[in-house]
Amino acid sequence: MKLTPLRIAVLAFVAWWVAYTNLTQAVDAVVYGVLQLAPGSRISSAIHFFLYETPKVLLLLTLVVFGVGIIRSFFSPEKTRRILEDKPPLVGNVLASTLGIVTPFCSCSAVPLFIGFVEAGIPLGVTFSFLIAAPMINEVAIVLLFGLFGWQVTLLYVGMGLCIAIIAGYIIDRLKVERFVEEWVYAIRAQPSALQEERLSADDRVRYGWTQVREIVAKVWLYVLLGIAVGAGIHGYVPENFMAGLMGRSAWWAVPVSVLIGVPLYSNAAGIIPIVHALLEKGASLGTTLAFMMSVIGLSLPETIILRKVLKPPLIAIFVGVVATGILIVGYLFNAIM
Figure 1 (spheres, rainbow, N blue to C red):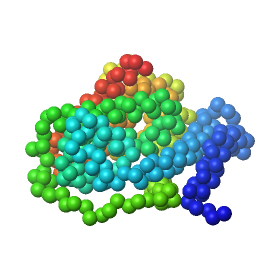
Figure 2 (figure 1 turned 45 degrees about the horizontal axis):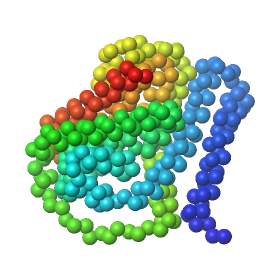
Figure 3 (figure 1 turned 90 degrees about the vertical axis):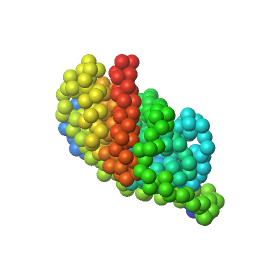
Figure 4 (figure 1 turned 120 degrees about the vertical axis):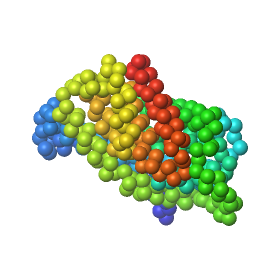
């Protein structure tokens, strides 16, 4: 029997399932058996956290990136633009935010994507909904949140992220800020694409999924290790409830300070989410930590600097201000209800 890419993917999934379901027992055997560390000690807690969370997150990341890669094989940049063309503003904002989750995007592609959307006649607010959602709610963030917090917090984060992207894009559209886009962007005339959409077979899509795994995991694995290492240190050595006074719900100033600290920082989901998980365990409130995480991921400083090539400072200020306000509201809301 010939091993096609599809059959190899099925066998790989069986191996993945065996590894994932036996991970806890394997880590316990290493920490308490091979290393003979005492359960409950600081060093054993830190090492167990690191040895368990690292393979768990990487396994989940591999599976979800592969699945999303197959979905992405159906959505080329040209097809994404066509879907968003000629849509009413609010409908366009919702579609753009949703497509942002499954469409390849990073800070370095912010300018070409922005230009391509403007060329296609897509409203500015719809374009911003896409630019906000794509880095904030990507498969890396979803995998890490699910692996560390469970599905409830993951759904809350995805829902709030989508709300921020949709509402912020709609507000920017209502403000009529096209005059704050650099003139040369509108001077470009979109040329019809000479490329034909490829018809991919199932094996082709599986190959594309593997390519996405290699490219994305290769980019973020070091951030995963560093983030989990910091989280392990906090998990094992920071006293219980230490963060309650700094990032607890009783500290009214914690949310805005967390956002102000987070905006200039640069990290991706792989680096920041394990740290957020450890902070929560030590008494930080969910609303404050979510606000901090969203500000770091959703208002990336490199992306903002790159967008200066196509946006004038007033529009960049509006963009940062609207998104930051949405994040503040999310932080206070979750602190009030959770």
